[in-house]
Length: 222
Image 1 (tube, rainbow, N blue to C red):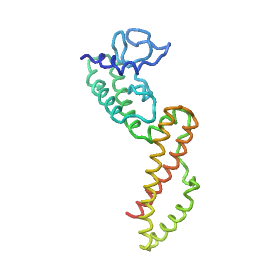
Image 2 (cartoon, rainbow, N blue to C red):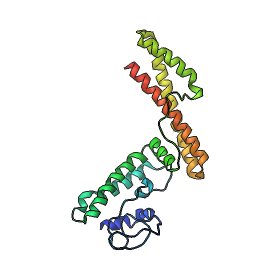
Image 3 (cartoon, rainbow, N blue to C red):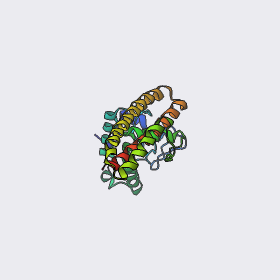
Image 4 (cartoon, rainbow, N blue to C red):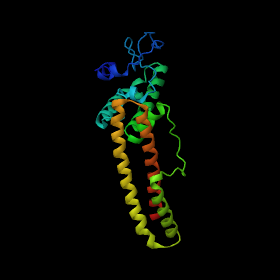
């Protein structure tokens, strides 16, 4: 099967992006931007959008198996070694496509990275959370944790069981946050509204803070 035939199947239809200003760099054919020109089959400049590049619907709740299948299929056919006899421009596009494809897969296979990617696309601030931004419902746990950490650092081994218990408690909170995220992902995929994205952002903030607590405790117990 020829390389372009692979992309003119199911994946090709998903990768066409309407753009009246786009034309093939090699033959000048004008059509919506696709990974391969539908006229001369030359590899085009890869689409920067991760979902479009992988031929996936823009959803937060995605199939890990489908993502992996798309990634492996495209990786096999976009490897730079396949373009060694092509024009220099096409070689550069192959390198760029392979690099972007790897970034896309690493991002979309991780639920947290995937959510942050969509949030960034929608204009949400996903910068580093400040350490003083303690979720109100965790104030008591954080206070007790700091006390136990001080005791352990001062040589009081009696604080170790308390820290071990705190670690398990925080890990349970992480699992709860992951479940909440999954529900919010499904809600967003149905409604596609910014209010749900705001809830996802808040949940990610809380999850990140809890993960930081887990890291602190594990370092202290090591």
